Length: 394
Ligand SMILES: [Zn+2]
Image 1 (cartoon, rainbow, N blue to C red):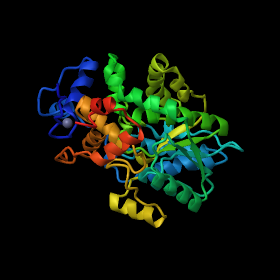
Image 2: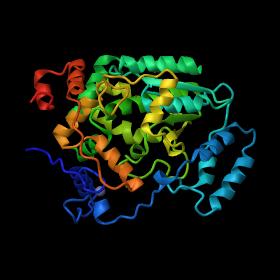
Image 3: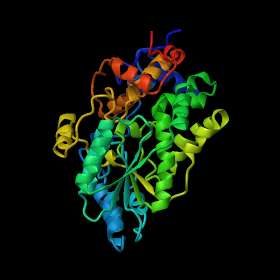
Image 4: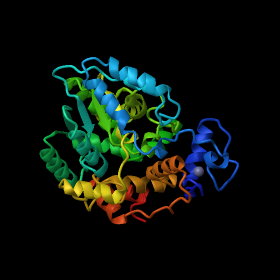
C-alpha cells in the first residue's frame, strides 16, 4: 500500500503525520480533509517568535549576566523589561526566568560549546559567537561517518581562521551504522511512540542527533561547559512532539533535557535489539544549558548567509543533497522516510515555519536528489534487499 503523501493546503504539514499525531494524542481528526487540524480549526497562533525581527538583545543580556561579577544589575533589567507589555516575543516566556537560568562563570571551564556540523547554519552561528569578546568558545562536532569531506574542510578552515578550537568526536563505524539501521527500521516495530519519534526527528537524523546529544553531555561534564549553542532553525525548535517552542518553559533548558526526548527512547530500542550500539548513547550529568541560537538571532536570507560564509572561506559542498550542507546521508534518510511514511522531516520543519510566519501558499513538495540518495546508500553499503525495501531501487 502506498503511503499518503498529501499535505495541508495552507501550511504544507503532511496530513498523514497530522493524523498520526492526533490519533496518538486521542484528539479529534481534522474536520477538513485538505487541511491539517491546526489550520482547519483556525488554532490561534500564540507563538509569534517568527515575526519578531531580532531578539539579539536578549542573547546579549544572557551573556552579560554570565560575564558580570554580580548579576544583580542584569536581573533587575530583566525583571523591569519583562513587565513591559509587548517587550518579549511570546516564544520567550519570561525574561526573569531566562536570566535566572544563566549558569555561573567558573574559572577553568569552557564558556560555550557549539554543536557544530560544519554546515551553513552552525558555521554562521560560530562566526557570530567567536566575535564576542571574552567568550571562550569550542566547536564540537560528531563525525558520524557521513560528514562530507567538504564540510570537515570548511570546519577546519573556519575554526582556524576564527581561532576557535575544533573537537571532533568519531564513534566506531559499526555501532554507528547499526544505530542508523535501527532508525531506518523503526516502522517495522509496533511501538507507536518510536514511530512517532522517527517521523518527527527523522529516520537518519534521529540516531545521529541522539548520539550528538548523548556525547555532548560527556564533553560538557569533562569541560564544565556553561552554555551549549545549537543552530537549529525555528521550525526544528518546535519539533518536540508537542510542537511547542524551545523556550516555552521560560528558563534556558538544561542540555540534559535533550536526553529524555532524543536519547532515551533510541537507547532503549538499541539495548533491546543491538546492545553494542546502545553504548554510543551513554550520557553524563552536566550543568550546561542549551541556547537555541536562532530563537535570538535572525538568520539572514539564504544568499546573504552564503555570501557571509564565503567571505570567511566556507564553500558550499556538492555532495550532500538539498537539505543539508554537511551530511552525505541526509537525502537517503529523507528517501527512507518518504517511502515508509509518505513524507520526510523537512516537510514538518517547513510547515512549522510557515505556521509561524503566516506566509500564504505552501511550496510544492520538492523531489529528492536521487543521485545523493544513491551515494548515501552506497556509502552505507546497503544490501540489495535493503535498497529495495527503502525504495532506493525501484
Ligand atoms: Zn496546516
